[in-house]
Length: 87
Length: 414
Image 1 (tube, rainbow over the protein chains, first blue to last red):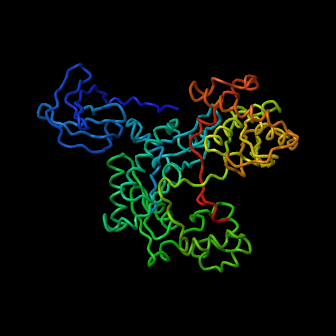
Image 2 (cartoon, rainbow over the protein chains, first blue to last red):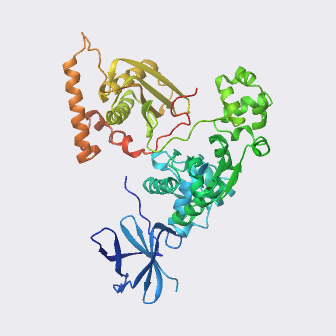
Image 3 (cartoon, chains in turn brown, red):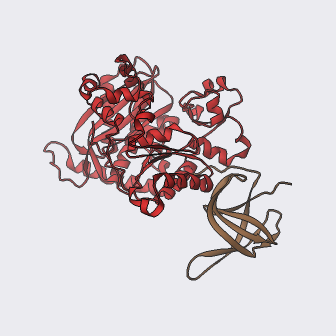
C-alpha cells in the first residue's frame, strides 16, 4: 500500500538544488518557487526535525536566509516543501 | 514510563489537512468493504459523544457535521517510526504496544538526561515540535501504573505515579481502567462489590482467584504495583507463537464454495508468512463469525508439521464442513497456524503419505513466493479464486499490516 498524499493549498512542493560533499552530507543552494523563479539560498542557519502546522507535514527543517528573509524549507522523505505565506 | 500518542490516527490526519482541523473528525474504515467503523476521533468529535468502534451512521447521528476521513496506514506507520526514533534517543528499552503506544525504561539514562519526569516532558515537547502531534506520558515504577498514568491526563501531559502516591491516585480509579480488565471482568467484579482498583488490591488474592481463576492473582498484583515485567530491548523480537489472518469479507458468505475461496486466500497468506519466518505449524485453528455476530473457533491437528497453503486451506475447509450447518450466512473468517516448529527441525517421514509429492509442492510454493515478490501478489493465483473475483482478489498479507499484540508476549503468564 502506498502512502496517500494530501493536497494542501499552503504546502508548496519545490525543486531544490543541493551540493553533496565528498566527505558526506549536503547543503541546499537554491530552490525554484511555483512561479518558476529561482531563489538562491544565502545561508542555512539551522537544521532540525520539525513539523509544519501551516503546511501540514513533518520533516527535516532547514532555516534559510533568502534575499535577507528567513524561510523554512522542509525535507519530507524524498520531497522538499515550503509554507505559503498569507497575503 | 508509558507514552501514548493522543488520538493518533485523527491527529495525524488533522496535521495534514488544516481545513478540517477545527471540526469534529473521525477516521473510519471503508464502508464499501464493510469496515465502516470509527477507528479514531479528535477531541471535538469525542466531545460530541462519538466512540471508537461505532458504526459510521451511529456517529453521524450524534454529530451530523462530523467529517469522516479514510485511514492512511502507511503515513501512520511513518509517524509511528518517527516517535520510536525519538524514544530510541533516550533508551534502548522501548517496547511498542500497537502503533501509538510504547513503554520505555529510562532507569539507565537518568544520569545522562535527568529523572523520568524531565525525560517525559522532553519527549512530549519533541513529539509536539518534530511531529506536530501530542502525547500523554505516564511515569511510574512499573509498566501497569505507567500505562494508567498515560491515560489519566490528556492531551499533552505527564502524570507521575510513585510508590508514595499510588494509593491516592490509582486506587480510586474504576476497576475497568486496569489493563486486562475488560467489560466481562468488570461486570464479574461488580457482582462481588469490587468496583475500584483499590478494591482489587485490598481483596485477598485467593478470594479473587476463586471466581476469576488465575487472572485473579494477576490482577491483584497489577493493582498493588507488584508487576515487575521488564521493558524489552529493541530488536528483541517477541517469540512468535502463531501466525494468523482474519478477514471481514466484502459480502456475506453463503455457500461452501465462498468459504473455500476465503480459506485458500487466508491459507496462502498464512503459509507465506510462516515460510518467511521459517516455521511450520502442527495445528490449524479456524474462527467463524456469522451475520448475527455469533462466533466460534475450531482446531484440527496435522499428522506432520506443514507450511503448505494447500494443506492448511484444505484442513481448515474440512474442519468447517464437518462443523457448520449454515444456520446463518458468514461475516468474517479467521485462519491461524499454531503449535509452530522451526522449518529445519528433523521430521518423521510417513510410510503411507506421498513424500515426493509434498517436496514437490513445497518447491512449487516457494517458486510462487518468488514470483509474487517480483511481479505482485495477483501475478499467480489459484484457479479456484477466479470463481469469485471480489472474494478471490483479497490480499490479506499486504492489506492488513497491523497485527494485534498481547501484553503477555513471551507467554510467561496465563
